[in-house]
Image 1 (cartoon, rainbow, N blue to C red):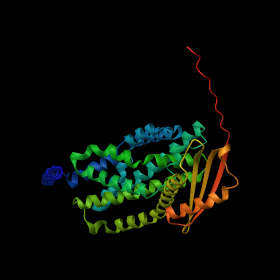
Image 2: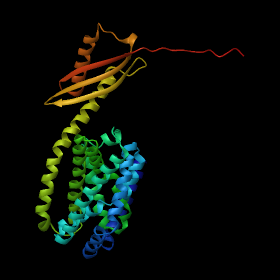
Image 3: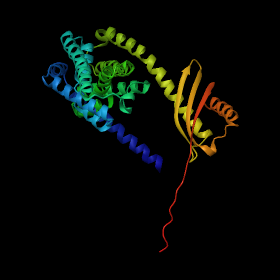
Image 4: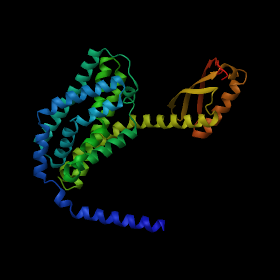
Amino acid sequence: MVFSKIRSFIQQEWKLLNLLRSNSQEEKVSEYKLSDNLIREVLAHNFSILLILSTAIATFGLISNSTATIIGAMIIAPLMIPIISFAYALVILDFRLLGYSFGRLIFGIILAIFIAFLTTEIIGFRIPGSEILSRTEPTLLDLGVAISAGTAGAFAKVRRSVSDAIPGVAISVALVPPLCVVGIGFALSDFSLSTGSFVLFLTNLVAIILTAALVFILESYGNWKKAIWGLLLLLASLFLITLPLNFNFREMIAKNQIHHALLLYIPESDHHLLESIQVEIKGKELFVSVEVVASTGKVDRVRAKQNLKKAQTFLSQQVGKPVHLKVIVFPIEIEEYEVAAPNS
């Protein structure tokens, strides 16, 4: 009964998909019209105004640690326009549109970094919060988001029926916030912030251009022969970018596995709490530093080394790699006070 319903649902969806394919030629935007539209969008006078406003909003959101504010900045950020235009110009080999898009993109990058730097200096902000720090260590997951966003952005440009998806694409890929963190890092003289966030922006940039160009080609805009050298250059750039992304991704997965294994070994209770876990990969070995908050009465200094060795062996078995374990315990005194209710 259940399988028959599932089969009928799949058949219905397949018929709908075939219907959309049959009408695809009517939905597609002509190559001439798309080029004309992209040139107008790239050269629009409101580009700078929208970018300044979105950068200011994103910077305020990053400084105040407000996710909702950052999302609002992504919606009005216009940086997707020259990026998609650059990808399209690459596949049709339109040097005029290529020059316009590249110039507008470089101008937008410099302007966004400068506005973020200036805003941070005026406010006097000095200590980065979690929203800022989260954009300084990109991983392969960010690359996956950028690839999906580039595909959706290009598809929305060539199909009228899905053009309303552009704001959602802008939100998902988040181009402006990483540039804001670059500017904030310059203002704080913390170049590790700027470097990490700029790598995140480059990841988004290269992945969007590459995947958007592939979508345009698959949709019969331009051809492989014209775009082959540009695509190979983008592919090589993406490969170089994935090296630090892969390292950060491995550290993130290792930290997740270690955290899970520690919770299996010492479940959190009222007497102790895992405060922080730091994981560093050196070759094939993991160096783990754990901070634990524990009540004074539960700290057993005599058996500490024995328990540490058991924990190290358990973690090594769980993650399948040699683990060097260091535990820092913060003993605290827990006192309870209670006032009984008066008798009625």
